[in-house]
Length: 347
Image (cartoon, rainbow, N blue to C red; front, side, top):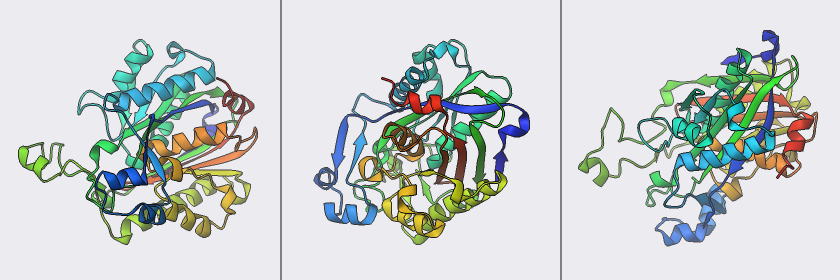
């Protein structure tokens, strides 16, 4: 795992504000069954802990969700898009194969010629975007936007028991800014293991298997997931191991963490993590029952909701965790500043 320790660079990086956006359309378990899901509403909740998720409207794409989340974060940070030096967008569902969704978002926000790029790290997307944005601030940028957005509902096979009920759509964002050394973000750690590249993937639509009539007929443009225990274990082990290694590198421990905000794949995984990490259940923020798995945006949305609900106070040490297909994993430890907590109440 590669760990970034901002204090070693003599510059601090803080999360100045967060924002999020969930589409208006609420899709319940009953709705999924009506759409053809081969499960009962009770089975869906028992297996995943999910009661509802949000799906994008027909005229909404990933960039639309990201624009809304970024605007929310900018408003709460009290700055304009022209004050931001860089945009990093984590997504696995861009509007188009090319160009990047980040370029569309950058133009809509009015960021001038500030650089913008997509990063692809599946459910670890926000942590990867956060790392790139933090490094930009450490090397000269005054402010950077880290965002993650996904529209996974467009890639679902409603006949697939393993995936049809898990995914939702949404976006989350954070404004990163310079601060005094030793404040704000203590550490960010990332890791990858390409042996799991086909654990969760979309078979067709890329350069390996371009779109054809046959790939469409075989529904190879929808999410495929290994139905065995390997993906379940990889998610749990990825987040727990990444947390342990990051905290060790930061000279901290779980006992010193006030709130854990993890990626939300399903409730069973989160419950298992609580037991393995030996932490009180209330120390882990959970919103999966309301949002489902929003891929790389999940952790960013959960962080924003935790702040708005008053679960994070000034001075709290917060641990972000994620693991995703690829395999990828990420973690970040930061101290919530007074400005961040105050921004969550700002309209």
